[in-house]
Image: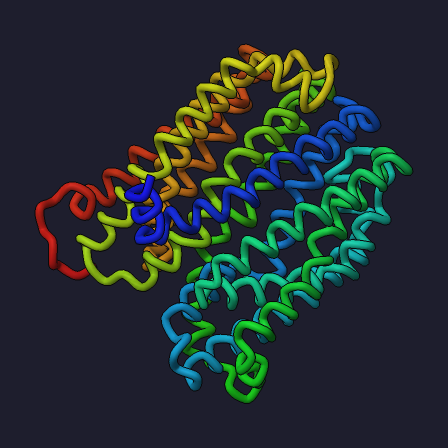
Length: 433
């Protein structure tokens, strides 16, 4: 036992994982309760509308920040001890986000009817987009604050903010769904992410008290603007386009198979998101800052394989347990109306297994701004997922979507291993990246 405690104390990844596990448990509990509320008051058909708005919001959030959140983390981590450079990094980020947010909010407000028809196909939820237009600036400012805290490697503070977010999401979603059913669910999705700004500002001030003085428009840097642009281009596929592809695929399912079937897929996606957040949060909290600071092939290999040895076995066991208990999981999280989603588990879980293996490697593309390779992998995945989703759903029904997800994840993994074969498997220890 003493050896185990000492090993955890000396292993930063394990320390982050241990503390993050508390947040994950809270997130799982929140996910179960909110999903149960949606199942009872919204149903399978309403779940499809919730899924469409959720994916649309991913695109809107990425557009409003121009996808530079990873760049904020990277450059803050690199220059956290250099106040003059840090001032340029943050002032430039603030200017970019401000301009993008104003433009996106304007388009949301005045184009509300258009977005409503695109996302909800005849249902009347135009007001949701007007609400989103007003709260979007709060969200994007929060993204900037989180990027700074993350860049300073304040792991526990980020996890604390995540916990606050989970609880706020639970309280707001359950109340609004109870009072207003589907309308309440959509309103909650739109406003909850903006609530966290006040907590982010408090933590930023307490932990990094000198940082507010670095925001100065006179230090806007064209050089850093160009560097951030590479992250915008990298986000163009994964953050801007990919979520909308999910909307188009879901609408295809609604039109050709049925709205209930689209709801089963959304239910499966919500379960997947609950366990994947365990891995993705660690990637953002630990892997990305470490890869950004690392300069050698040996260091890259150590970071990747340390993650595999430490996290992947636990994740794999968890997937097996979820698959064996899938019927119970559906009944516990949702209700009997969602039992047909049982047929989606195998391909979804297998695809998520490949996805996790590939994500750890893929973060190197972000950390080192390998734009060409990144766009190649993402565009290939995008085309593959959309085309296979349409083909498989026409052939085998709703299971075709998760089959396409699995194929996409596996091919992406093969591409990434091919790209990084030298860094992952060569005997070179000191060569720089």
